[in-house]
Image 1 (cartoon, one colour):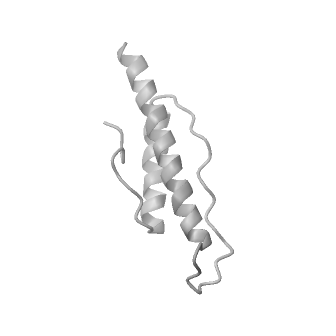
Image 2 (cartoon, rainbow, N blue to C red):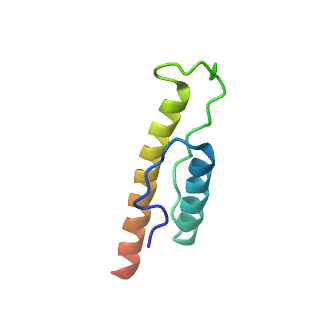
Length: 81
């Protein structure tokens, strides 16, 4: 089973970091190289802006998760074939 395959990122940094770690570890066990994780924002002003840099980070994190899961699933299916 692929770690975090059905998980959706809810907007917590600790959750995103755990996701990155788990999927990178799983991918390394499958000899799969994943693209770099999205960088954590460092320009948030803390005013709760619409379109905050954190919203973009979590959207990018979800895209990264989907891409990483797909790469791991492809590798697993190739190993099973």
